[in-house]
Amino acid sequence: MEDKWRLVAITAVAPIAWGATYVVTRHLLPPDAPLWGAALRALPAGLLLWAIARRRPRGSWWWRAPVLGLLNFGAFFVLVYLAAQLLPSSIAASIMALAPLALAGIAWPLLSQRPTARWAAGAVLGIAGVLLVVGLGAGAVSPAGVVASVIALLASSLGAILTTRWRDDTPLLATTSWQLIAGGIVLVVAAAIVEGPPPRVDAIGVAAYAGIAVVATALAFVCWFTGLRHLPAGTVGIIGLLNPVTGVVLGIVVGGESLAPLQALGIALVLLSLVVARPRPAREGPLPVARRRDGALRERSAQDDSDT
Image (cartoon, rainbow, N blue to C red; front, side, top):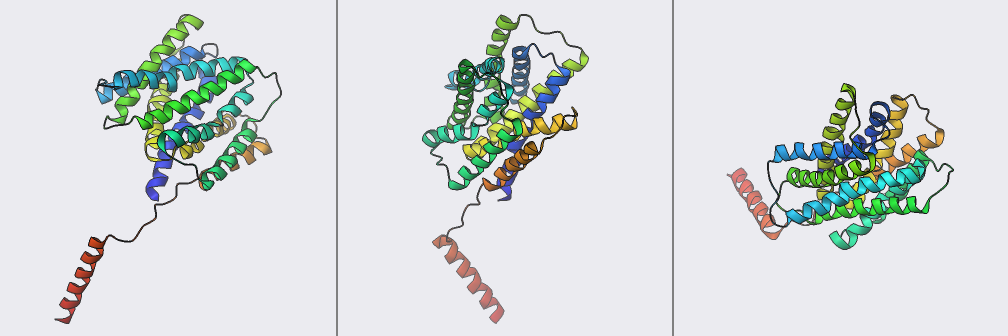
């Protein structure tokens, strides 16, 4: 059971790091270049992991890596950008909070991971908590924005499940680096077309981009994919709800924002959902016949020694 909780802690590094990027982006990076922001975190992170892994794609990974890079990074970040332009942030965040349902729904047919009642209870608590944290503020809801946000959710969820389904003996650092590089190239092209040249930033901005690339992208996605390899996808989705919670908490600590009572209740519900949906320890069945016989022989030998 301790190993399961260790995996939960490793996986939680990802949404906590992603939640921290909200504060860094708001205070240290230009707000009018989100596509370049995504490109400058994905491509350098991929190159960094590739320099560590020092492996090139082989066989089917020549086409798998671009597909996963498009789903997990390229198309996902572009669609999130479109949704942010068309929807109030609270609505967009609320749609993305359905990630546990999307991951579990796709994992059922592709990974044969059937949702449990314990997971369902945790998912309900977690989603309700996120809705309280981000709120459901008033504002015009664009159907196109909703479609973009839903497709982004499904694309990233499918990419995460396929990353797990297609795993082999290739090191995780290598497969993650290939995805980030492929997605980063797509983002660079999209950013150049939509936003023009890269934004100019000072030394603090360069350090902020570097920190996001190393911690909130390279490290975070290695932890995220590690969790998907060893934990049920639905559980990983619930852990991902720490993302908006981290953003709100850091906004209070760093940005001096206030915490409403309903937000505090929402944070408590998200934390409770992690406990409710926690991985259950594997049940120990009866010992195999060989082990029982071996144990009996040892006991008999010990008894003989004591008699003598």
